[in-house]
Amino acid sequence: MKIKLTTITPVHISTGNSYTLLEGIVSGNIFYKLDPFSFIDSEEKLREFTNWLEKGSNPKLSEFLNKDNSSIKEKCIYKANCNYSEDDISEIMECIKSGNIPYIPGTSVKGCIRTILLWWWIKSNPKENFFFLKEELKKITRTRKGKLAKVLGEGIIKKIFNCSANPKNSDAKYDILRFLLVSDFSATDYTLSINRVNVYSFGKGKKKTFFIEGVEGEFIGEIKLNIPLMRRCINNKEFSLLRDKLSFFGFNEEELTNYEEERLNSIFINHFEKLCREYYKWCLEKEEHLKEYIKYPNELMENSNFIRIGFGTGTIYKTVIKLIEERNAKIFLDIVNNFKLGKYPRMLANNKLNPPFPKTCKVLDNGYPLGWLKWEKSC
Image (tube, rainbow, N blue to C red; front, top):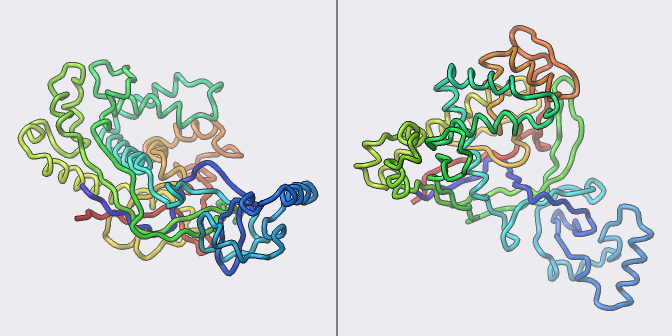
């Protein structure tokens, strides 16, 4: 099924790379991404450039070019809106692109779907899942601190998403979400901007700032289930838990057998959209303590379907850890303190952590949070 994602606030899916103004110029509220070596057309120019680099501190390409920007547009790799001066910017985090055009990786969308389905399953089966969590915590030693998400996540995700006859089998082919196919989302219309991100800490205000490439626009991709593969596996003894976990997709074995693929995909999308609305309502409630720093766009108040992905979304949106606090604040306190999730130890007050966790958030200059997109079925 074709899905259209429309950004509500800028999205940043990082390449993991950053660059300085040695690779770009700000001119007339536009940032031009450039290759500095494209301006070097002789050995003499290369020596001049090298000497300039050695003498300079935090060099800017515009200084080397002496503000001669006549050939910028011709040699520009790509450009972005920028309402900041070069003096404001030290480093910019690069967003993912293909052919210098931003896109949204299917892996980012699928990761979001996985988190929401995980949240729903744990909420639907709290007693069983929290007993398992307690047992997992007993096995974790202090020597593995700092890797909480991976350590705790390994056992829970394997257990919940595994549809193998052997619940300890970690082969990816037994992951229930192997039946979910998510394409990359290509831009049909987009704007790239240089955005300043401000980090605020609960009770302390602004801590630091940095710059990112943020993308806004419309993106089209496809999400569907591999129904033929699912039908082949449902009676295979290797996948003995599959029929019990079809509820992840919103239908049962009889419906899988008898319904057409299009209908089954529609059932899944409708099921997921319902979970989305419940999940993000829950998330917004869980960051209530940070709302003095966050301004929510009016669109988020509409009764529509949204997802949140990418950099700056934070712990609440990328994990289900707040479910632990909701279920058992004492266990949550032990996790946060024992694994040093924060600079200072927490205490319990009125069955909640004090100071709260998480205690920081990332927002743009206008107070908007990053990464919100509206989700719509597309013809």
